[in-house]
Every structure is written in structure tokens, then in C-alpha cells.
Image 1 (cartoon, protein in one colour):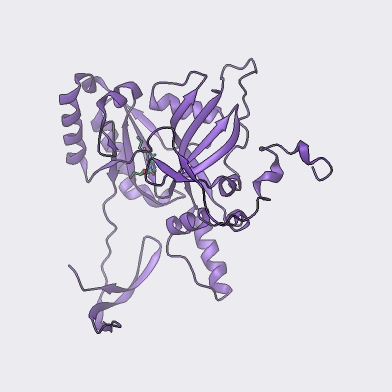
Image 2: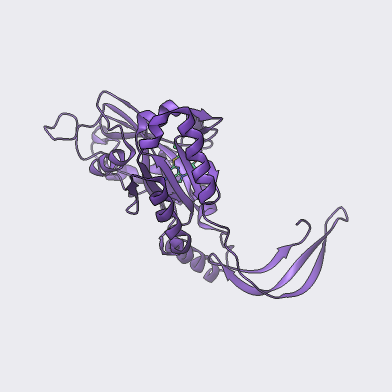
Length: 323
Ligand code: IVH
């Protein structure tokens, strides 16, 4: 490539790093809105969700459901032209995101070229233009390792994997992003042109996998909401077995045409719901109460606790200025 610069293709391995630092991020308009999710806090909320949407469309009564982990990372949008990764963006406000293509290229699990191509006589054909959405994240193990190294070097450590991932992807210098072991799981097709894509969420996951994208290995499909809820609830205890931070599970109507027809409320599609894990709780001893004095003289009481571990962090202080 050094001798033949015109031979450099966007999917060349050298393009994973190599991009120069930018002085700002360009804006990218998403081809379709990047939606959010309404929350359910427990089984009754989920049942109420089903009742609500069954009133809108009675096909809901026979619907299947896909349950996936709700990864606490950063939503990203990946564009492929003729199977080649050409652009990647943050979610932004759901309509317009930031162009973080150079940073996303450094994530090894993002295919720079979809191995199956439209001109091959393969069973799977890649649409001419394909836009997928996934969650970029820093695995918990890698996060701990990074903090351990920073601590050893006497540097400031990070608060949690999500902030670290977000900070790493919003670096103007891709060399910095490349040094962070970020990874991704994809779960949605935002847009496709020139090719057929599946019409159920379950098949979308299988299809994305066949195209070479990393997908979750804990997704399951159910014929009844009650079974989906039961599976979801097994993860209340099991969340620590996941290699990434998850703040819940997502229950999705499998039939994507039905889901789309149900529409949305604000930015939340009616066809899916985030089933949140209960907040982590531990018990410890209140050793003392301190008072912090702000620059303006405001007094803020805080608790000095017997150090206790919760969700991978040790807590020894807690603010007390609100309930
Ligand atoms: S589906 C219409 N699936 O959770 C599709 N979202 O609180 C809407 N998230 O902004 C999103 N894992 O960034 C979906 N398996 C998953 C997810 C997931 C994480 C994030 C996503 C979204 C947020 C909503």
C-alpha cells in the first residue's frame, strides 16, 4: 500500500488504525429514526404493556416474543455499501448522530467487509446498502484490566464500562480508541436497499450472524409472554454471568411488520419493552456523617459507609442531600 496508495481500499486491515485525528465530528443524518425503549419494572408492567398493545391490534394475542440482553453500552449505527463498511455514527438525538467512522473501524469485531457478497451465488445476499444498529461496549473484564493498569500507573481510573466506552468512541484521535478493547453486538437493521431482509426479529439475528456480525448468544424466542417474562427473570440473578454490563432484558414482538404497525409513543416503539433489572441492593453500616462545604457555602451532607461492594465497585461514600 505504501508503494501503491491507490490500492488502499476502505476494508483494508491498515484502515483499522491509521486515520488521522480530527478536530471535530461531522454530523450524519440517520436513514430512519434511531428509537429508544419504554421501561417495564417487573412482570406486571410487562403484562400491562401486552394488554395495551393487544387493544390496538388483536394479532398481538398470537404474537411471538424475542428476549435479548439490554447491553449498557453506546448505540451505534453502521453503514455498508456493497458489503463494505463506509460510515458509522453515534445515536445522537435519534435523527442526527456524529460521524465516528474512524473510531468504529478500530473495533475488531465490526466487519469491514461483509464476507458474503451480492454478486456471489450464495444463499444469503447482502443488500446494496445496509444500515445496522448495535451496542458498542467494553467487556467487564477489559474494564477491570484497564482500571488496574491506570491505577498502577498512578492515573485516574474510570467509573464504569459505559462511560469508558462512550469516552473512547468520542475521542477525536482514533489511535486512542484503538487502544481500548471495545467490542459490539448488533441487533437491528435500520435500513436496507437493493435486497431482501427477514421480517422477524429472530430471523434478523440469524441473518446478521450469517453476514458475519457478532450477535448475542443469550437471545431466545417464546410463544407466550409469560415464558418470556420467566426467562427474563432468570437474568435478575444471572446478570453477573454476562461478560458485559446489562441493565435489563429487552422483550420484542418477533413479527417486525406487526411491531412497525403498532407505531410508537414519542421515541419508544410500542413493539418492544425494556424489562429493567431491579436496582442492586446491599446492606452496610453508616459509620459517620460528613458535611461538604461548597464554594458558595452550601452544605451537603454525605454518608461515610463501611466499604461495601456493589455491581463491581466499592462504595464508601453516599450523598445524603436528597431522599
Ligand atoms: S432495541 C426499536 N435491543 O437500550 C429498537 N436496544 O433504553 C429499539 N439497547 O437506545 C432498541 N441493548 O441503545 C434494543 N438488545 C437491544 C439493546 C438495546 C441495548 C439500548 C439501545 C436503546 C436503549 C433503550
